[in-house]
Amino acid sequence: MSTKPSPTIEAYVPLVQFLGAFLGTNCEVVLHDTSSKEQSVLAIANGHITGRKVGAPLTDLALKFVANREYEHRDWVMGYTTRARDDRPLHSATYFIREADGTLAGMLCLNMDVSDLRQARELLGRMVQALGIDNAGPKDTDDHSETFSESIEDLTENLIVQVIEGAEVAPERMTAAEKMDIVRTLNARGVFLLKGTVGIVASRLAASEATIYRYLQRVNG
Image (cartoon, rainbow, N blue to C red; front, top):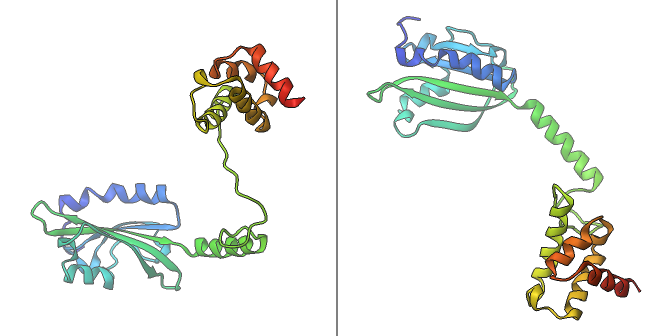
């Protein structure tokens, strides 16, 4: 480096290896010291992505960011596509590091090799098309809603609430015929295949268990 990095940019050096380890070997993490543009790379993790090492210069795009004073208008540039020297596609982002007075101290850049992801996407796309599970394609079966409950009580309560909400009156004001209709609907939805549900239904319908059993006999008769 032609000049000693400022304390502001040096504080980011440990972050480079941390991010490199966390994001994995498919993501290059580069810290640029823009006070030394010819040897700007102060720290780098997973440099095999672009083949760079500490002491490498700013890229042409980074130079453009500096020349256009991009850092004065936003904190970062995210989600742009670049390419490695062997033409692999990279998903990239740059974070601008400023001094206290607003001048540019450096840049923290991420370059993720997404070639494997693109190949996986193409493979999955072919599989989705071959299996006929594309949402845009024709469907042979109806869609079904599903509630994932943690207990029988939760499941029963959810089903009862769904059915009762469709009624026009509260359970306390229902006639015997209306309550039997509720039992008929719950029975059709398989509620009474579960142990212990008669008591829960009886409680929610303000009826005795004997009454619910009597309704079930009539429904199944």
